[in-house]
Length: 117
Length: 119
Image 1 (cartoon, chains in turn red, cyan):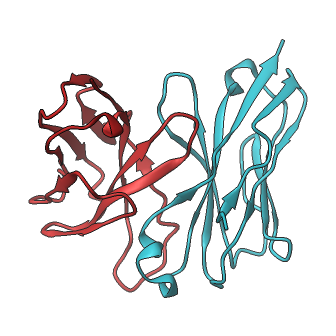
Image 2 (cartoon, one colour):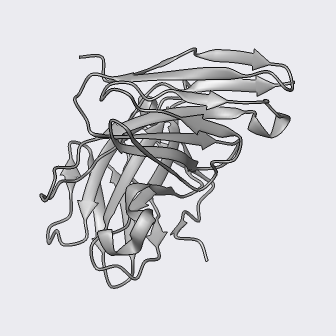
């Protein structure tokens, strides 16, 4: 049981380039999330998904896109990278039963450190 | 107004002593969850402990306990018998209730407290 895995661990992009950050979870969680962490700050939500085929914007979605074709995978796409997107990106997942109660604890991947120059 | 406030940017503690990391929160929801995460220098976010707003008992997980004072809107993390490996950044986070609309899907994080355990 690997939990939440992310690739790559590190990446340097040039301004205007694009890339996809990969995220996979093997816990059969229905909810998945993408956060970014800027230096000295807590995490901010970029996008989230409540299940395959359903995604929605978080606090800071501009410059990003997501898709969720399977329960396991939730890739984050950066189009036209900008220096402001230099950050550490975390993927997370949680289980929320339909109509039931749970702690909805979010479990995080190891993060991707992205630098845009 | 900030939803999660961690007033201690840094804390120092001697090995084997207990330490309390402060967290206050702001919400109008009756149903919410409070979480603490640890982020060591390697960067990963490790879940430590959870407290639900309706839980009557303070949460405990091994050496971690959560001092939950609902009326004061505080959720302080207590680490007993500190170890060198406890040196890390600690984040308090809140998930608001379903009545908060879109907010109930995300965690709102504080800015963190950097804990250093001295030998």
